[in-house]
Image 1 (cartoon, rainbow, N blue to C red):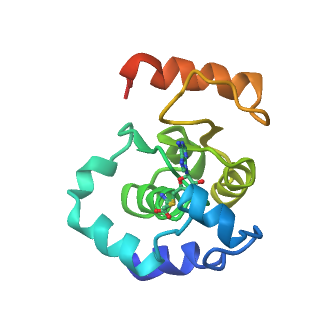
Image 2 (spheres, rainbow, N blue to C red):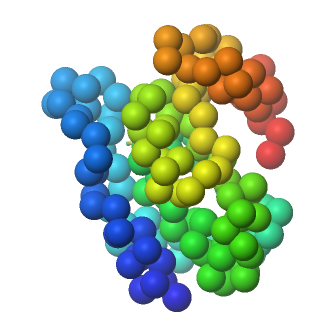
Length: 145
Ligand SMILES: C[S@@+](CC[C@H](N)C(=O)[O-])C[C@H]1O[C@@H](n2cnc3c(N)ncnc32)[C@H](O)[C@@H]1O
């Protein structure tokens, strides 16, 4: 199963799809976790934490290096549909293109543009819905997961 999860995750090339200049990387810390390391980390976690209905959130999700394998873990181990697995998956990133790429890789999911450290601040390219979601889920440190 883990081999299949790696294969599905690596369909998207590591750190590809967005032109990340070095000054941007320095500012945002956009060094994504390589798939082998993500899988090593996921294997250390009690698999039942990924069972149907268990919410998984990456508050700095980048292009989805963690969330993509988590989706496939829910599908392959727990026989969830992709649609149901995505209902359990949440991600936030401050960069519009990362959010869009993450969502594309996942095929959906609750992926929002936002500043996890200042959730109520409205960002330029953030949609009104994303802003509402950031406030609902993160403002006042009342993470309802
Ligand atoms: C080190 S990468 C990690 C990405 C992913 N979690 C992974 O392990 O591959 C950090 C990500 O956090 C985003 N980021 C930086 N500051 C943020 C903030 N205040 N709120 C939300 N996302 C932020 C960056 O755009 C970048 O994509």
